[in-house]
Image (cartoon, rainbow, N blue to C red; front, side, top):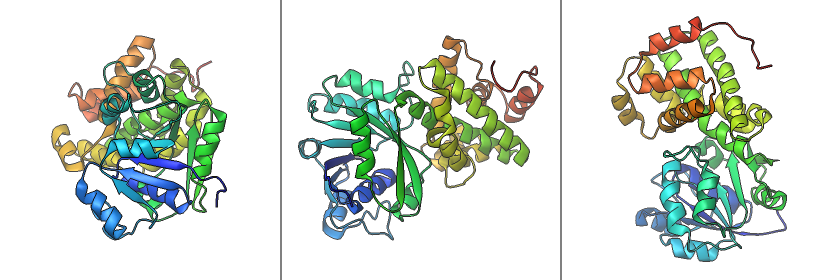
Length: 336
């Protein structure tokens, strides 16, 4: 158990936020979690459960909840944001005046700002320039397995070496191993683009094109991920780790992944809008469009990501996109 105990505030008591907050509580941290739903807040405080997300599991008895963001910010030394990427835009503006240099931020969403493709760490820094250190927590993790305390590995990336060590120490539990990195850009690029590639893998499986095709797209997709990371100032090698390849191996091969299930439905001929309604939030849809537009601006060849974007916006059928990818001119496997 850690000798150093920090005050943590977790924003978002969804499946992901609850699993992270619970892990922190198990590690002995002082954790307060926020949610807009008063029923969830009462459930955690009165019954040590979040039955909306985990009806069959209890949360740690030390975990407390609030429905007031002001209370959470006043409590916390470290604020962990566990809401979808699009919600970060609103939340960063909403919290900007409350945050101080004494607050550290841990961002867990996987996406970009729609208007210009900005990384979410930049969104927070722009909204609250006075904010203390920022870190990205990412990696191959299904929330329920973390909640069930199954073996998991993640990575925390921050330019601040001391802060990323503090974040990693906060999750000092037997079932979770946290690695450290200084590559904030690569960590975010990997986490976001893997959602697009998970959609691609699902589409291939929906088309019943075989395991060979899926392995090829996943591998070549990682090359595109590395190109995009490098263009934004990140390290190409980061995407071969937990935030890129690790996360992709998880989400592109399991029906527990919303992006993969969505892709399967599209591959089977279900219209995009209907598949989205069936699955719920599909981060890969918006990420595909943002990365495609930004790749063009940077002069990058991201054929797989662009093909998926074309499928999702009705520009090409799934089978036509697959044929196009196979018929492209031959190139060296890696850029020289």
